[in-house]
Image 1 (cartoon, rainbow, N blue to C red):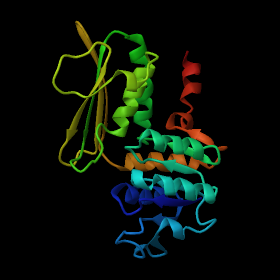
Image 2 (cartoon, rainbow, N blue to C red):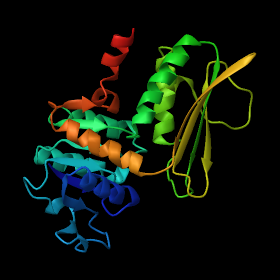
Image 3 (cartoon, rainbow, N blue to C red):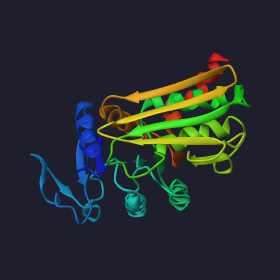
Length: 262
């Protein structure tokens, strides 16, 4: 299988290149922005960095996007033009950009994941279940990342917040307290605490607290290869799917597993 990687010169792009090669896939396109200093430079002996407009038909079977939010529109347009499945791992997307993903999914297979870790996908389900079982407890989401991360709360923290809200039949937008600051806690709200320091790769915990007890669900990443491996696994799976919008939970068939355990 031939893979094209968007945002190939970044930290995650480099990790995906390594993970794809380790999985026995061919990295046939390493995409950077038109302004990138890496354009035209070698990735390895048989491949050079190129721009999206230089991507040729049949050069790749699937795209993995670890670029920036402002590149999403062009990435989706080219994926549709070339009829390529695309795994989107870019965080910090707004509502309009999610609408663009929905529109593209009417033409091609699209998998969006704010976090491609299998562990985070499982954590989402645990958060939803716990929130439903404890409808009156307070919920706080604490996340920590490296000092250069741009968006806050992280995309993963927001996804966990959406899972917590969904467990109660709510929308996060209606119950989010945002990043926790001054003031008395509003009952039923979901708050976020954000840490940006050093080289922390990614840590998320969800706190469920009520008088007399609390539950903490936590996920920590020790190596970026976890995200890269998950993205490659998602890309391999997506090439076998019909057009539509998918998530990591679909790839793992979690709904089927939950029914089997019921």
